[in-house]
Image 1 (tube, rainbow over the protein chains, first blue to last red):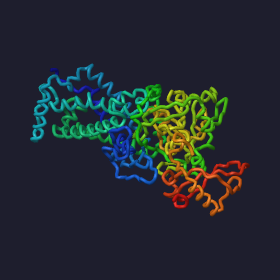
Image 2 (cartoon, rainbow over the protein chains, first blue to last red):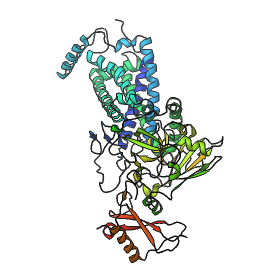
Image 3 (tube, one colour):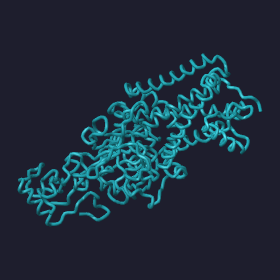
Image 4 (tube, helix red, strand yellow):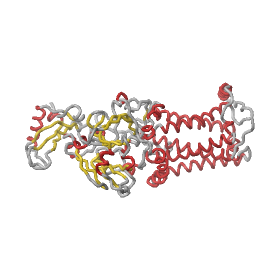
Length: 496
Length: 88
C-alpha cells in the first residue's frame, strides 16, 4: 500500500482534537458533579444508582431536593469546578459544537485523501495480530508495525475504535440526553435504554476516552516521544530537539487555554454566559426548537416517586392557601394582552376538557422521572387573553422566594422564568394542576406549574401566581430570562 | 374533606375529636382572626408542615380554620400546632 504521510490538516486536527476532548472531559465532569449518581432506570429513584461520586446522605424526615445532592469538584478535574453547572454546560456545549464540526471536516478529508487506510482494517487477521501485539506489550517489548504502516495492529484497531465508534457513540448518547430530542423522538431515547441508560453509557464513553488518552500517551512515550511528535508537528521525523520543545509548547498552550477558561468562568461568569450562550443558542434554536413534544408513556412506566427540584414557598400565606386546598389562590394573567384575566383553580378546572400527558422529565442536573400531568393547554389561556402583537415572551412569576426557600441555591429573590411565545403554542405546553391523577402535590408546584416537555425542568415554573406577557425580559431581574439564568448562569433556551 | 381525586395528598383528615382539640387550642391561645378579629372558627383538615417546609418543626401541622364572621374579608386562615396538641 501507499506510504501514508502526515498532511497539515491531519496534524492540525490532531491538536485541535486534544483541546476539544480535554475541554469536553472536564466540563463533562462538572455536569456529572451536579447530580453525582448514575442509574439505569429513568425514575432515578434514590438508592437505585449503580454508581455514586458523593458521600452525602440525604435526610428522610425532611424534604430535600436534588440541589442538596450537588457536589463541588476541584477545578483540576472539572471545568470550571466548584459547583458551577451553568458554566460547565456552556463549555460542554460550545466545545461539542466545535468538536462535531472538526469531526465532520476530519471525516471528509480522511476519505477524500485516502488517509482512511491508516485506520480501517482490511482483514479479520488484524484481531489475532492485535492480540499478539498485546502479549508482546505485556512482555515489555514493542511489537512489529503493520507492513508499510505507521501503526501496529492493536494501535490501528484502537484508533479505528475511537474515530469511528467511540466519538459517534458519545455524540449519539449525548443527543439522547436532550429533552427536545427525547420529546420529539421518544423511540430514540428508548434505543439507549432510556434517558438514564444514555447518561450511563455516555459516562462509559468518558471513561473510554480517558483510558485511550492514558494509553496513547504511554505508547507515544514508549515508541519515542520526539519522533512521534515530530511526525504530528512537522509531518516527518526530523529536528527531534525542536519537536520535543514544540510538543511541550503545544501542551502548555492547551493547558493555558484550560486555565484561562477556568479563571474566566469563575471570575466573569456573566460574560462567559453571554458569549458562549450566544453561540450555543444559534444551534439550539435552529436544530432543536422546532422539536415539539409528542410523548405518551404508558401508565406502567410512571415513576413510583418523581424526584423533586426546588422547595415550596415557606410562607404563612402559602401554607394557609394550601391547607384550604388553594380555594383562595388566584392566577393573574396580564401584561401585553388585550384581555387581562384572573383565574381561580376552579376556573382553570372548568376551562374545557383537561389535557393529560405522560412524559419524561429532564432535570438540568441530569436526573429524570416519568410523570403524568393534567391541566389546561397553555395555548387555550393564550387565546383567551389575546396577546398584543408586541408580546414576544411570557414571564411566569412564582410564590417561591429563593433566599428563604432554597438555601442550597446561589442567589435570592422571587423565582421566575421566561419562555418565548413560540413555546406557548406547543401541543404539550401545559398549565398543570394535577399529577398522576391527584391534585398537584405541594412539592411539585401546587397549585399550578408549567410543563414544557422539550425543555429542561427548571423552565417549568412551579407555585405560579402570575403570568405576564412581555416584549422584552432585559428589565426583569438581571435580564437573562429567568432566575436560574440570572443567578446560576444557565441558558434561557434549554432544549438540551 | 374532599373525594380521593380532589383531596390534596399532603392533607391529614381530622376527626371531630381532633377538631375539638384544635378549637380548645384556639381558646387557650385566645386566637382571633387576623383579618376581622373574629373569635369563632370552623375547623377543616390539617396540613403536615414538618416534612415539606424547611423552617418548620418536625411535628408541625397547620389546621385549616374558616372565620365564621360573615363580614370577614378573608375568612380562610389557619393555626400552627404541634402534633401532641391535637393528634392523640
